Image 1 (cartoon, rainbow over the protein chains, first blue to last red):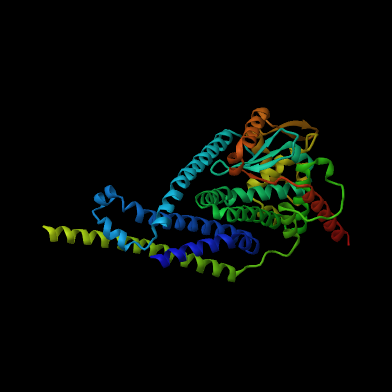
Image 2 (cartoon, rainbow over the protein chains, first blue to last red):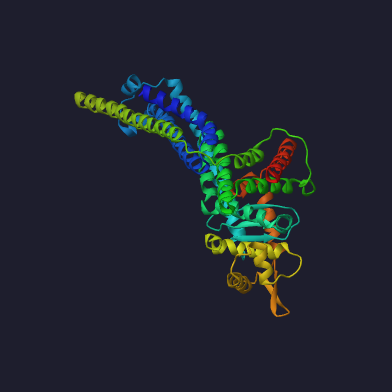
Amino acid sequence: MRAAVIVAVAVSVLVAAAGPALGRRLPPAVGTRLLVAAAVLVAGCSVFVLAVMAFTWVGQLPPIAAFGEWSVADLRSADPIPTEIAAGSVVLLLPAAGWWLAVVARRCRALLAAHRSCRHLTAAGALVVVDDQRPEAFTTPQPTGRIVVTTGLLKALTSQERRVVFAHETSHLLHRHAWWLLAADLAAAANPLLRPTARAAARCVERWADEDAAAAIGDRRAAARALARTALLTRNPDLAGRLALAATGGDVPARVRALMAAPPRRRPACVAVLAALLMVLSAATVMVQHRGEQLFEHAGHHRTAAVRHHG
Amino acid sequence: MEAERRGRGDLKQQVFAVLLASDAPLTPGQVRDAIDADLAYTTVMTVLNRLSEQGLVARRRAGRAYAYTAVVDQAEVTARQMQRLLTTGEDRVAVLRQFLDVLSDDDERALIELIGRIDEDGAR
């Protein structure tokens, strides 16, 4: 059991550490799906392994042992998990579970608020235009998915730039990006090691929508230009035409550069490595479950034998 | 064909956006030219009629054809609702997919430089 726990923890840490790099290398649509799936699996497995370890200690408490009908002494002598680690798991799990539930509740409330705000809006397609001078565009989650754009942004964009913005936002709705990211966020809330992976998934989602927008207008460089211009507009309308010297940048410049470069290549090797790691993780988790069960069965069996012997 | 590749919902958005971006009422021909000159006139008319039924565009006679303007009905109510969505809390923003992140000064400089590079390549 100890070996399985170590493998599960090691693979979890490895996947969490590799997440951001994978997000940069994989094509965005594949990257999003894989990273979110990996995050959910790692979160689930790590919580489960922690719970099994915690229970080897909780099971030694006399009332629990009496309820489960196993022998405390046998369990203690056969338990491969050191007491400090098992007790530490309990200390870690309880506040983590509370925190996770709080995040889930907050997100649900936010989703409901978005749903309520959009339910009654009349939309052209999914488009809702807000009469506001500040340039702004966003989508709300399905099932009441809407593309919300301000008049300020629409008036500042050219016809082609509008198409890029709409195609980008339509991609978010079409592929239900909000739900993928919700899953990644909840995984990261369960296991904080996954936070960089969740952020990488969010970057992948934006790149995915950018690629779809570029495909919709059939011109990557024009899409890149539209993205850059819209970014500048939403920051400061006066700056759109001005030129200045180069510097390195964060997220939006990286998205623009990605569109200026060649289309993303498939990375079967990356996918295969990640899939293999996730398979090892699943196997180790199943092993932990199996060994944990054996442990309690063994302690239970001894107790019944002892009772029978005394009787 | 271009017009077929583009979904109906997409076209509806395009037409509505063109009308919104224009200060003067537009005829169906002008709307078509603003989106794609190869688009069928009847397609644009169909979309305009549907938007008109929804109350999203208003039309008035301009010579022989109608001219259309976009109606942003209840804009203020919507604006306030949307503003509320955007401004209250990290979770609200997390469930919305915003088109763009906040830009730093460096990002801004990088973007201006990138636009310059694209334009240079295009001019060559």
